[in-house]
Image (cartoon, rainbow, N blue to C red):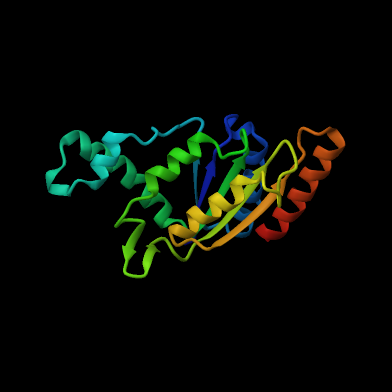
Length: 200
């Protein structure tokens, strides 16, 4: 049975444009894969703690030497990693805030990037351990950024996923959403047309 993980990172939860596009993709995909398991993680309603010294120390402490507090931190990270490990398909709703990704998504990335667990260092450099997954990213932006130097999201998210071994990454953009109703309607229509084709 195929498992799909949907990650919503809009501060508006399911009401954000990126979340709505991701949700429409998942609904269409589910209709074609009725036996699949769908897991949804909403990073606005269920935010994760940002990385700090205590958590990093816990991650790098050997299992037998961890304190009870450190083990709690590791268990929280392990649960997220197990969830994404089980998913063959990952769908991310990605708004742009101040030229970057939401801080909640960065916190999620920091929780799942664990040396020896989701990647490892070798004599030939780092090797990702989460291979064999397909990712669809629905990027909603108020302005026009794709293909310009101001688009810091695309390269960063792709590089991060590649680092973990996830190389099959598809971006769908809905841009200009704050540039008037005509531009917004056209952008959303184009994104929806593409997501329907991808979901099929």
